[in-house]
Image (cartoon, rainbow, N blue to C red; front, side, top):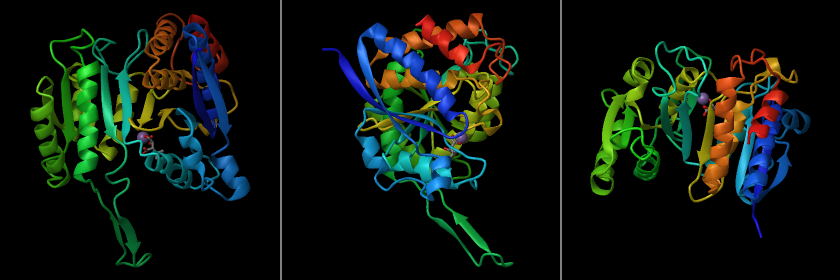
Amino acid sequence: MSKSYNIALLGGDGTGPEVLAEGIKSLEAAAAKHDFKLNFTEYDYGGERYLRTGEVLPPDAADELRKHDAIFLGAIGHPDVKPGILEKGILLKLRFELDQYINLRPVKLYPGVETPVKGKGPEEIDYVVVRENSGGIYTGTGGITMKGTEHEVAVQSMVYNYHQVARCLRYAFEYARKHGKKSRGKGEENTLGLVGKTNVLTFVYDLWERAFNDIGESDFADIRRDYYHVDATCMWMIKSPEWFDVLVTGNIFGDIITDLGAMTQGGMGIAAGGNINPEGVSMFEPIGGSAPKYTGQNVINPLAAICAGAMMLDTLGETAAAADIEASVADITANKLKSLAAGRMGYSTTEVGDMVAEGI
Ligand code: IPM
Ligand code: MN
């Protein structure tokens, strides 16, 4: 009997459901070719549901989603809902409750795609950011006192414990060992670069750096270790992206540098991410938002969702199927699409989805 996987679908808001539908086409094509089955179950979590019911997420949402092999997410964020409610109440809540402590974000320039980085191509822009996804300033304590007065105080603290840091670093070292430049036949070494701010955040990034060196020295002596301050990282991402192989960093730095990374790979239309719990249920998503401006017009670029679907299959162990989706995406960026920007692809959302699926 062929293998089968249960996938939870969270279309979410705005263009989320549109891009997810295109991702599903490729998943189905890859499943048919590689002889496995995907059972999809849809959930209506998102802004529309919140506005209708007043409930951001049902109380059993995480338990419900835990029953699946993986989660495929479109986008969260609704123009009629105050920023923060849905992002914190749905996206972040699920990441934390499902303990998806890794946010894996490849920065990969596909062939034929225009990058704003002058003189760089697919050979140079090809690395991966491992963003810690369970802690830091996202979950640190905080609050406001004396609100509305001259003496108002706002606190939002960056908090990490050794456990969170160590498990993220171990994942990143393992990832570098498996998928680093040497392992991919693209260089002499597999390298993990720690992105921090040891010159100012002398507590949190001191912990990261010590753990990085200790764990690296004792268990990953085959992996070369580099260190970059986060501000310098932004500089090198533009000037010499070819230096990077696998980067690992805390939650907020990872959030920021991957938007910059996405621009260097041609924009949010192609940037995919995986919220991964290596021991549990993971959730895959295009890293861009819900793009209310483009909703329902069949113009949004579905490639980020399609690539997120490929990451999902890769994580489920369907490596060949994932590679087929990626190859089909690369063929289309190289030979078909005029641009990756919404409305300027030369094709509609559904046409792009069909082309990728046919290519598989
Ligand atoms: C991302 C997003 C989220 C984050 C927001 C929407 C909460 O920017 O996935 O990068 O900050 O993690
Ligand atoms: Mn972000």
